[in-house]
Length: 45
Image (tube, rainbow, N blue to C red; front, top):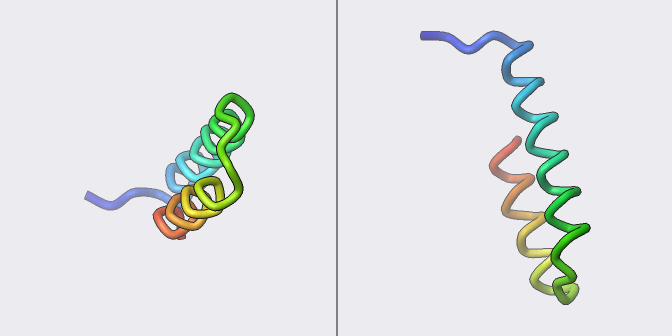
């Protein structure tokens, strides 16, 4: 089963929204935030 480009774009968009919400609600220190961001972006790329 192949995933269409639109589906990937949608999931990526949702992932970015989740990341923004997470950053907004959880006031983590900069190191933790950076680690999560890098990890999250590597999953999306």
